[in-house]
Image (cartoon, rainbow, N blue to C red):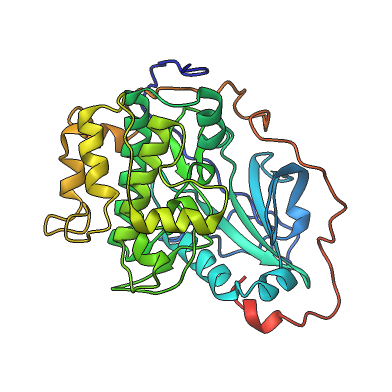
Length: 361
C-alpha cells in the first residue's frame, strides 16, 4: 500500500515567523505596522483593499477560503469569508463568534494563526496564515495509508496541539484529516475552529463529522475534553488503516456503529499502536486515555510514542516524514484542489440586518 509522496527530509531548526499583514487605518494614508501584545490579532482594522484575491482554496456551506496577497508587504495569506445570512440561517452565529475569539487567544506552533478580522454588510472576513502544503487528507488519500512512523509523527503533533487547547479549556470537536494542513516543511497546522468551544467542565452540543464523533456526543450525554482524545484515536486508526473504523455510507448507520464500538484492527497495525487505540477508541470513560487521573501523561508516555522527543517536536527541529513539493514564498497553491470561481459580493455596502450579531468582527 504505497507511501507515495513520502520521503524523509532533514529539516533544520530556526523557522522564521510569517509577517503580519500591514494595516492601513481608514483615518490615515500612512501605512503603519501595528504591534500587539499577547494576541496575534491586529489592533488596526484590515479591509478588502489591503488584499488582492488570487483564487479559492476551499468552499463550505457558509462561504469560502481564498488565497490572497497583501498589497503592502506582498506576502500571501488565506482569508476565510463567511456569508452572514448563511451563518444566521444555519444557526452558527455563536460558533462563528466563538471561532473568532478562540483564534484570537491561541498561539501554538501546530495551530493556525489569525491576524485579524473585518466585515462588510454581507460577509465576515478572517485573515489567517496561508499554509501552502495542502491538507493531510490529500496526502493520506494519495498514500492510501501511512507507515507506522509517519502516522506517529502527525499524531504526536496533533496530541501537542490538542493538549495546549485543553489547557486553555478549549475543546476542538472537529478533528479530521481535512482540518490538518501541512506547512512548507511538513509540520502540521490545525485549522478551522468553527466547532471549538471554551468549556471548563462539560457541554452538550452535537457537532463534528460523523466518523469522528465520540459515543457520548452521539447519545446526547454531557461530554468533556475527552471527546477530542476519542477523535485522536479515530485519526490514528485512519492514518494507519486508510479508512475510519465505523464508516458507513449513511451517517445514521455510522452513529449506530459508533455506539456499538466494535473495532476491527487490521493485522498490520503495530501492537503498541493497537494498545493506544484501544485506550482512546473506548466508550468507557474510566478507561479512555486523556480522561484518567494522569491526564495526557498516559498518552505522552505510551510505548507507541516512546521514541518521540517532544521538546524537539515542539521546536520543529525534528525531521518531517514528508516535505510538500512546493515553491515557498510565491503563493504556490498547486497542492489545493481547484474550485469554480464565482463573482463575489465582497465589499458590499448598504443595509446590514445582522450588524448586531457580529459586533467583534
